[in-house]
Image (cartoon, rainbow, N blue to C red; front, side, top):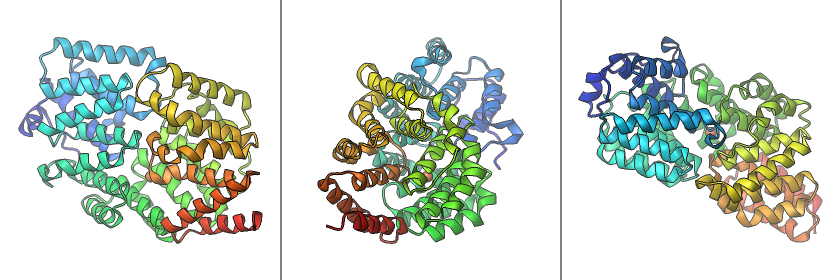
Length: 464
Ligand SMILES: [Fe+2]
């Protein structure tokens, strides 16, 4: 674990001066950055939230402390600034401080990027972070916030190239180089460069075996290649290491459970849900929440009775019904509402997202209008037994679903949903669509027991 936090002089030496005279504030800035890129909570500083508080206490006028606090809150995706006066005030305070303080151009750009993000212009925020990186390629805060935002927006080549561009400016001696390597591995995986992704992730793991995000990058490669047994071995043999990364550990358990669903080992997937996913998802981590929704929905599509499990996550899901921070989250929240048979709340959510698609603002508002609304309507139709309508809504936009964000593995729930809807539809054309979708699936991942099961199901249901 990293612990020699950089003080004012150390940041200056690295060409990333911070406008504060407080060494404690600078050190906590490093501690927050380290935990953010490392996906873990460091008990020596009381975890990420405590480090943020201590950074602000050490120097209340330290603009980058406000940038970090606001940026990380926004990127956590669990708060809609439109409905949160506290968040609105925090962003306004950050902008006021930046206006009156003598800060560097780099810091001023950080303020502008977070402000744009808060206003919903997430691609605009990325442009500013890229401007920062042009002059300061070792500014890991700019790089990580840009990478997370590209991921939010399904901009995979942008996410990969953003990291690739700065790599030659980094040396292994620069702090957090290992985490940068792990980040790079995931961007390679998400752009289908699987061999390079594994090689790069292993490089990161040689530097730090506890780099949970690097292990996670390899788990994606195994998922995409249909190497589920290797995936199960990876997760089980390295659990003690990756589980230390609190922010990604729940998601690693999700990947582990997905391998079992693929193999038809539903009890094992349910065991992981009961031991980990269901418990972790009520702690405010949106990744854990969407993973829990996704897992239960996948199991139900496979015909598994998940019992009362939807009710375990319902309350948390309900608290996000009107957020609309990301359509990916919206669709998963809706899955939970429908799964828990809360039709009235599901209707309220549909009304809310439709209203957001008309009256909202920002990038996600546009994505909601183009993809989020028809996607959610498809889930609603499916739940009402109108499988044909679900296909008609989703099939024409399926190549646009990437815009809602999430990894290819996460968004596979929508591919599976479309196949299930097409199989259950009364229309013959939809049965043909189910078959061609299964052909596509088989071509992409030959070794997939789940695809084989679905092909058998299609043949049994519609032999003609
Ligand atoms: Fe993942």
